[in-house]
Image (cartoon, rainbow, N blue to C red; front, side):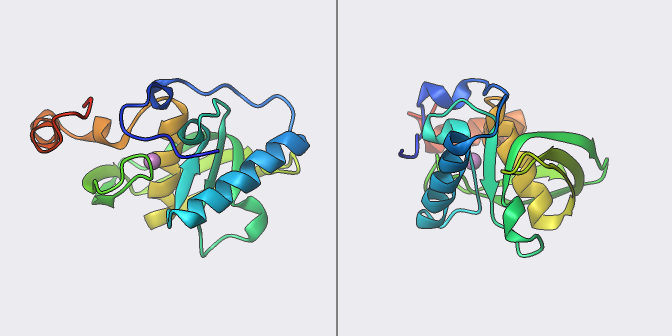
Length: 162
Ligand code: NI
């Protein structure tokens, strides 16, 4: 398992729903968590390691360890109020962008035991969850920039498919 980067087409694919949470899924999540920590990231999604399954792992000071992986996560509600903050992505090393996202989100998914998990997140965790769930739909952080900012990004990184 390794982190897929830049123009790797897998990053543009839509991940499919996990039907059964078994040992294989738990192993994937655990490996993803290790890779995320190794890369000093705060979140990672299946497609970023070439696995087109709806699995995300993330870092949080506020949640207990058992929910640091979410299977089939879904944003149920998001605040209209938005916040802009710097974001990076393990698939785009060295690129940091100011991205506008909802301040708060309500996310539902399953933990690695198959239990329903509901997370009311704000601040950094809300941002991480939105970023990672985007990955499951093939959406990348710079897709959230306005046209002018995307053009600027393209000038700085001409080989990047923005
Ligand atoms: Ni990312």
